[in-house]
Length: 182
Length: 190
Image (cartoon, rainbow over all chains, first blue to last red; front, side, top):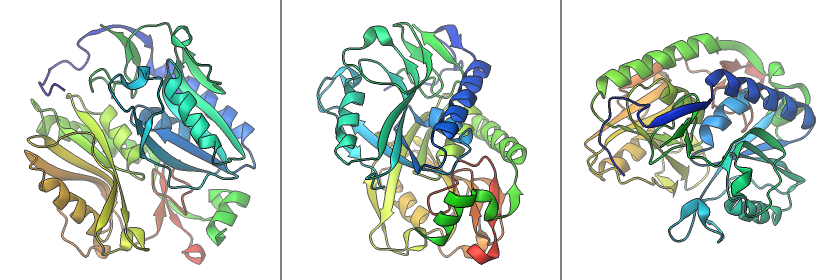
């Protein structure tokens, strides 16, 4: 990891894919849809660290029904991170018992789908009342294992993207928009 | 289910809300000021913002959006050994440690609220043993009347009275973290 300071936070960005206004407007729609679909239910939002937190923080403000929040952190065993088709290792497990709960997994991006698929399988063993997926971005052309996405922000082509929680070597996470990067 | 949980599930948070203590525009304006101040103070550095789960997440993400300097973020989760959570005098147990080696780094611990100060004091002392270049605390809320451990707050959002608050990351029996403002709870539910 580099700790060299750059004066320009946006250096390396080639084009903006989704503006802040587009993202916020889509999140408001997702929040309204989730609030309607889960009305009267016991909604638990589960956020996967670290990329998903920016999306989660804005999404949950748009959820108008009572809900609770929990976090998981996972890592792959070896190198390769997200590309790995092996089960992820749980670094931080849920604090909440999800048996009988309506669980909505919140992620920034679904790529190959391996990590997600393994997580869903793991969470299903705990017998939630329901288990759904909300992803801000999906790269369908990269998919190697089918993952049902119930709530999706945007589909994107197979490009390196960053911003709005998604980093490239820990940079660009705090940009309020999503951009492609060299 | 507790009385509070029942009440929220049946009637929503409105039935528990006494008053809005800090509204959304006031929160956002103060977060922007803190972001500008941190950006100026850390110009030329790449600070690492460390958020303690779970309450600080909303504050952290809004704060980072206001930073104009390169920075990194990381998360820690701690829990107390026994019962009592935040009020506990016991040392916190690290349930999720940092992903980042902080030796020589400029670290800013980002927290939602400083109450008794015991947990944050312990976390600061743990982080200090790892020899960061600097270590400061940024807290959205400070309840000085409740303080038992001395905790220096370098960047503070608001000083609040000793009232039961919720919203903007702070929970009421795990609910209401998602509200965009900070409210106080009616006396009968405290």
